[in-house]
Length: 439
Ligand code: UGA
Image (tube, rainbow, N blue to C red; front, side, top):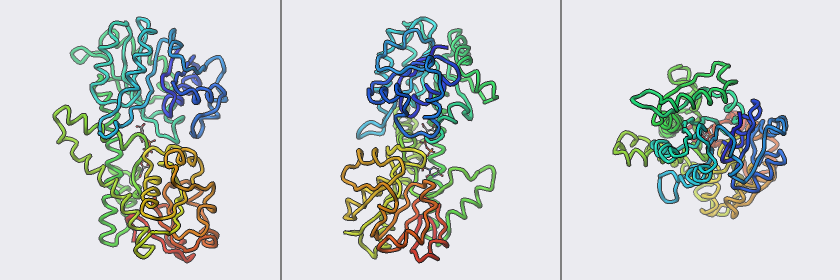
């Protein structure tokens, strides 16, 4: 199948390579020349485990990269994978990249082509796009993406489920929708053959599935972080609490890790855009709880700065703080809305001398927060530090030796922002150990 992928970020680049690895002939398009230049050289333009290997293994004839949108002509299926960031100063999603992508490909579409929306959009967007495409003879399918950064290749090739939102008439897929489904079944023949569940539905449901899933995940994280606040008020331990409630299969232990909370390019902006859309639809009350989910999440960052102040006996002014982690989560170099960087910047603004380190994200972090100091290794960051903050749970930080680190620092104060260290081990090595939601 000839496929085009418009937008080669964390989603699109992985999707393009993965589709080529399944034997499809793929052209990936992006406006960012540096990104396309890297991909043309078979280099991943960002850190994503497994992507370089997959890029290296795909047959040259099956994968091309370009900044020229006209190259989508001839493809039968066009995946729209551009970003939908939060609008500046508002909760709504900024759809300008989706609109530009569609405006750019429209003249190159042929009747019978299928345009597949993967970007996360406010419900109602697909209906509008389908209307705009009607004169081209192409059909729109909404096919939300659920990949996690750090596991993007695995999640693309072996997703938990595949969702198609088709054009419908009285609840039944139109003939064009059914034809589009046949094409998409061909694209996803390999994962479908694995028995991965396929949910075929309408546009509205498909768009909602994505934001509902991310809202649920965000709510689960903020739930356990709210429990962490209760634990702090009562001397209880949120990690033991999470283990105990997580044994109930109806609850489940995953996404119950309390700490600095959620960040990244998806969860924070998706719950806000969802609230904004609910307001436009006159059903804001249904999502009012997401305001609280957001508030709990942001409070954790403030609390972490307070905790640093506590261990420094009331003031962080002039204190050296080493922040281990800049990425919003391990196995990623993405620093968008990173809790780690947000706390680092806040401490710096409040007078601390902050040095941040990360195995992969220093370059992106430096570009986002040029006023912070950066180090290449945890040892370099920790030298003469008064406080160490573990902010992103990279394996190399979880495994740090408290004795060796203790030789480098000025004071043995460790803040475990992700609740991944063993308090007893660190205390036995002479450290003051503090964490969110733990005694
Ligand atoms: C998230 C969803 O998990 C994906 O299913 C979705 O496709 C994606 O957004 C998207 O919309 O594109 P991602 O942003 O890559 O994926 O990261 P997650 O693994 O969901 O983590 C999000 C944040 O929550 C991270 O900052 C992480 O540290 C935090 N988190 C996660 C916790 O604080 N506690 C947990 O228990 C789990």
